[in-house]
Image 1 (tube, each protein chain N blue to C red):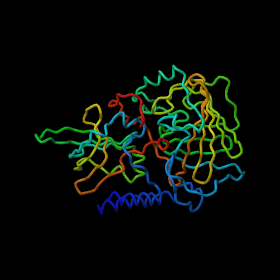
Image 2: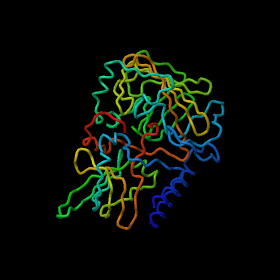
Image 3: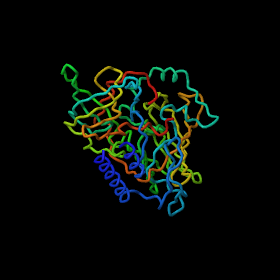
Image 4: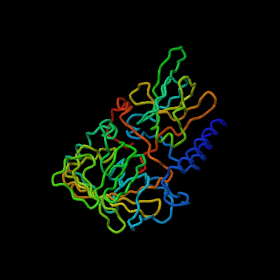
Length: 258
Length: 134
């Protein structure tokens, strides 16, 4: 036990030391996290930072997303309703856990989150969301851009970004219909159009609202809400899901919560 | 040990939840938490690979017959944030493992606690649930 404690302590000290060297320090002396909720324990508190030109600075490593990845209907904003078209409801009931694209190392699409940190990077023309997992991929957001007339359907779609005061608004079209919204297998079609609203409410916390408009699978648009927490001492680590994805041969069950 | 490790990890600002949930596929779809097994044996292999680390264990039954078990862990990424390294287990280690068995009845299980012959306990091997799932 003593030896293990020493080993673990050494690991922790190393991590702290590494984080001091490597971390993108958002501000000196963030307060200790407090409270819990979706997105995990609250992030450090303090004023939300801004870039030199006054634009809100959303950069950093985050955990969390704008929807409930277990069951998207559990993350609806108050007053919102999720009503599926009959065919979509019927399809969802047939879905099997082992067929979940995410379990097969394919992208989560939008807005489903994953239990891994992701990093937002801002440049003057492009914003990037770098995902540790799952999968180890990225989204690109074209700032003040335009959607193509007839985009090829893709896993993350075509995203353009604008600012609405201090909220980053990401408008995305051009999705394929392959990814699931959650572990339960809520479906969608290529008509899907999402509008995500990212607001860094303070140093360590971001609220994310997502409006999902898919007249192909749902009777009307609905909006989900979630939050992300800053991970101030975290660097993304390589995560190649395809390397040893050997578990699904043991799974034969209806799509279900994690 | 568990407490000590918790304190250290919390000090590093890296405390994660240690609930038995698989990271990128449904834990409940694969494992039955009502089917707990305790396995004593020798590590034959430790695969420190994504999306989940695994180790394999030769377990001898009372008649001397040996069966090899496949024990699933969390992702190496989240495990190293919780203090693990690729050296935490190695071939030849004698361990006692508590685990939830796979529903398909094969010698497959999700490890929950591991105790080595020197008394070392390894915990935090299970991935946290997605942060947005209540």
